[in-house]
Length: 265
Ligand code: KIV
Ligand code: NA
Image 1 (spheres, helix red, strand yellow):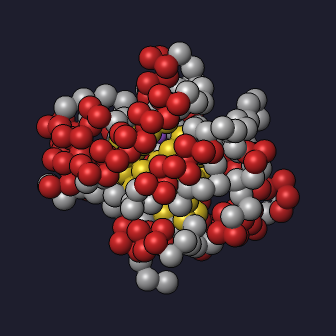
Image 2: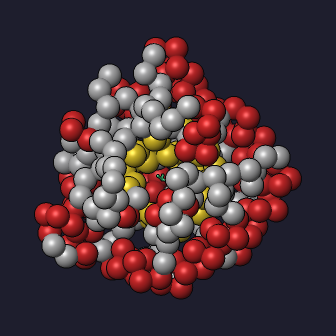
């Protein structure tokens, strides 16, 4: 299969073809995901939770993400790979450029940053210097201490309008993808329709242009607490490759996420 590109992901949105993605942190799973035609993989700072056992993503460093990005790249040489910029690694545009370079050198095709208006200049500078950017709105796990917990965002009309406005500003600044985390289905739909860049939802309803899940969650490995938007695809299939194939199939046909995995409103 020809290598995935941002242009192809954008074309998929235009054609109404859903994008199926997962987090990946190591070579073995990256190889498995590539074999099941996952459209792209994210080296998420969720590795703070899944790999390191921390209770948030805040302890994760750029070196941690770079280490796992290299592993994923080695396992899936042709995959489209996005790397999270971790907490406080993009506090200024200059810092963002220096730290993003480490992730691009480790094998990333794109970096992801959490936030809205304050990031517009950073995004412009990264893109001008050759670093494609995925933005991230809704629930921002790096801001959990400001938000006061992992809660659905954008429920009130004014908050929803503000999130939509920020999404449009991020696109105008040069972001080429947008992750939407834990927002009501209606807001996921509005934003996806208003933008020409693809939206990738996690707990953002079925109308996003694509979906992403933390791989451990979709294999049911997170035993203490499963968020509402998670589905255990391994339970239904009993086989890792078949679980990934079922996830891809259900995202592509639009049967995942269902209303039971989405937030009303
Ligand atoms: O770190 C992560 O895994 C993420 C996804 C949940 C989008 O940012
Ligand atoms: Na993340």
